[in-house]
Length: 181
Image (cartoon, rainbow, N blue to C red; front, top):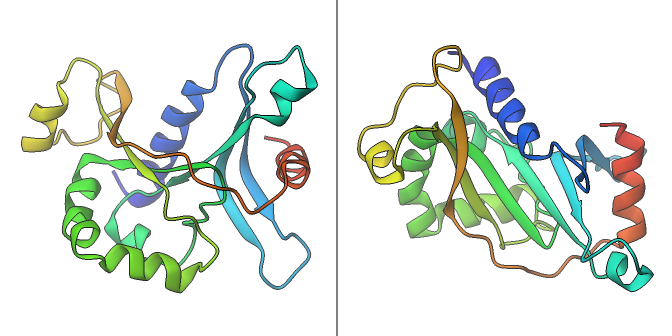
């Protein structure tokens, strides 16, 4: 499977998580549209604390997802726009394993703040694995992406702690609305 197909597969797998009532999300969300510094978030989700009171909505958080098919994609210079309280890289197990040394020695964090100084350092990593597989087994021996013959799921390999958001709720909700999913 090539990079484009892998990216599409991961994006479809992620959008399956958003199905159902009470899920507020958009894909290809442009931030700072109309400026020379436009940023695009692959997927953005808004998670309100509730929907019956204004204060519940105002206590909601934004989760940004950046889909990366391989390590070269991670370091391509595009994406990594971590603007939410929570942020995730969505990738393959192979890419995750390839990134681990850079995550441990600080190379990734240096790259993140070089390409996007406004990005949050609060992020986690989700990987695709076959539904019937165990995470430890997949880490030891990753299954090649084959979406036609297996059911897949996303698992969190690195949790994301909630951080602070620099953008207003109104701005981000408007950007999500403008993207039209």
